Amino acid sequence: MKNSIPKSRLLNRQDIKTLSLSSLGGTLEFYDFIIFVFFAQTIAHLFYPATLDPFLSTLNTYGTFAAGYFARPLGGIVMAHLGDKNGRKNMFMLSILLMVIPTFLMGILPTYESIGYFAPIILLLIRIFQGIAIGGELPGAWVFVCEHTHKNRLGFSIGVLTSCVVGGILLGSIVAFCINFIFDSREITQYAWRIPFLLGGLFGIISIFLRRYLHETPIFQEMKRSDSLVKIPIKKVFQTAKINIMISMLSTWILTGCIVVLILLVPNIMKSTLSTQETHIILIQMLAIFSLIIGCILSGGLADKIGISKACIVFSFAFAITSLIFFYTLYHCNDNKNIFMWYVIVAFFAGVMNFTPLTMLCIFPPNIRFSGLSFSYNLAYAIFGGFAPILVVNLNAYNPILVGYYLAFLGVIGIFIGIFIYFFQKSEETR
Figure 1 (cartoon, one colour):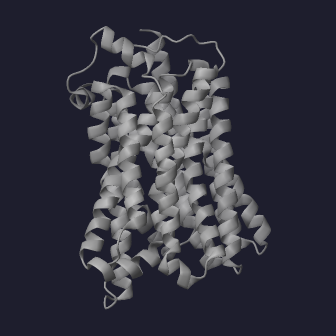
Figure 2 (cartoon, rainbow, N blue to C red; figure 1 turned 60 degrees about the vertical axis):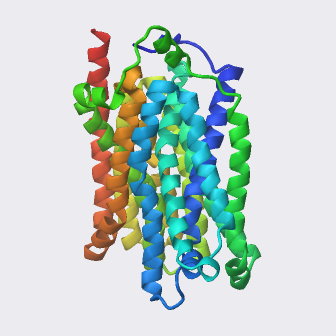
Figure 3 (cartoon, one colour; figure 1 turned 180 degrees about the vertical axis):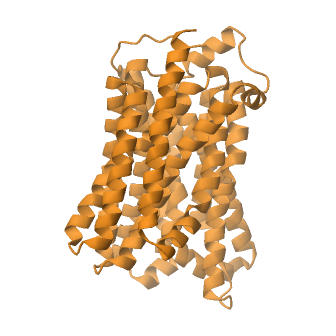
């Protein structure tokens, strides 16, 4: 079944409402998921025995954070199955509920001093439930917005949604920065670290209330009326869409390079390489995230103008080139302003990550779209996102410029994916 919505139409009030509420939920869910890492050291101190070696304590904390990533494929498969069988909206409500409750619990969770080893055990369970929720949230949001949006505005709409999800990371960094600015280290350890989690829980409750006003997608309603729903969607994905899975996983690999490597890990590389204040690194990271937000929106707008395949090739090529220029500048230029400028530029072209959802929405048919997209995305993110820190640390230790080559390689993959989309769409037109 193809999307039968007209090709020529601007977003109306209902479209804007759907996009706004979906984007708000995505922002808050990713804020809830990422805020953990900004207070990892404090959490390590509070939730593990004081007699534990500091290295092991921190390792356990990051292991607990990683548990959320490894729970994503499970959440993605289960929630996508429900979404393809019982409706996109029902899953959409469930995913945010599974994120909000653990986040709020995190804000009131007793520490090791109060309840002993139950503290780290509950902490681990919280992260697992958050991972399950995030595994269904973003794929669900992409599908939900896609099936409510007219084709001529799909790129822009997905770009806005994806940029708002990135905005959740920016919001987390801003809140963490403010907490560290307002409170001293003693106050943060005593109580202030809980504030970001309580805020996330509160805003999440508001988002749940607002999502009640969303409507089921017209495409799912049509599939239900025509009895074209699939009994076991993931089974049909494996039977009919193996190549689509591979392309989707490659595309997700690019997204992990943009977020995990460029936004989350490269600032640490700059911190160890440049002679500058840590606050400068934090601020330039925030600016880079904002640049990425703009890049996601404009890449989507460009896709609406010239087509997904051409726009993907343009952004992929620019991302590969600017990645190489940035890393060359980082190690061969003494002007920090010039280095920061190129970091912001490459972050803008990291808007190529917007073609990850656009590609997957394009190549999976509606009756298995959620399951195909969610399985591919979450499995690839768990693999490539989970091992990215280890890979980057080793590449940087061997030869720092190799991290730039790695990002450029992902840009080349993006070019080939753009070519694949071109021929895929041509074959669809001839059917």
